[in-house]
Image 1 (cartoon, one colour):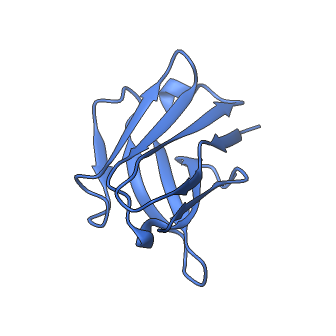
Image 2: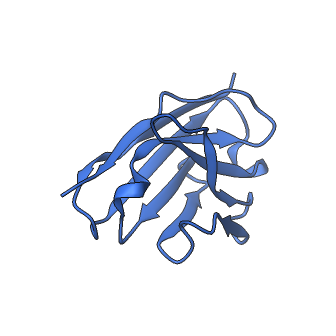
Image 3: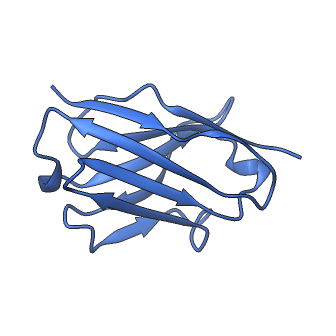
Length: 114
């Protein structure tokens, strides 16, 4: 069974940084593309970043390109999201997801405010 546990969120000032982690289990991690999504209050969940199984291919939403970096450590079954130059509009609950699975973790709250 696919299990995903996100962590690393918190309260940060605009311009600050956070690193999110997602620990995965229940499947062969390195075989799957992984995504980060976020959902802000009153808005639909949106895809933020994607990484291929080897980590060599990545893609980003326009809203975070140049500020966020997705990476993975297949030895640790973990995917990361490094978020720099955070803006108030980045405030949301952040989730990771495996390609082809409908399982979601509990998410981790990121709040950007002065």
